[in-house]
Image (cartoon, rainbow, N blue to C red; front, side):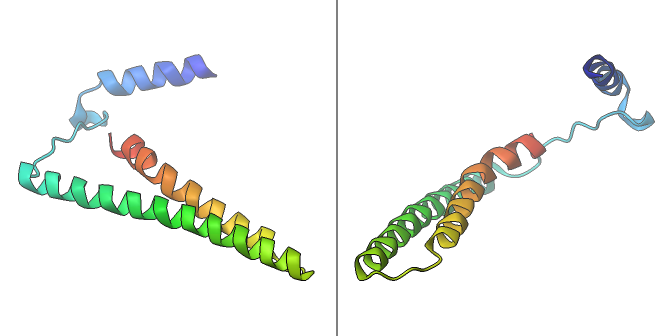
Length: 101
């Protein structure tokens, strides 16, 4: 099966673009714009990482306080949502690079 997929991808890459091959787009964005966009995306990525770390710390603190009080709560579901958000933030950049590169 993998050899069939490899052969199909080789055929698509070798075919010229007008006849249904894989198009190879060229970036026409100005250099100043791409630099500014990369800076903003880097800041947003760091902010998302910081928010994820803060969310894990706050959830852990809430778990500790609830345990000390003898209360039970749904902290594991909160922790799961926070960790899911962390995974989403961590994989957003590589996923976009994989799809658009």
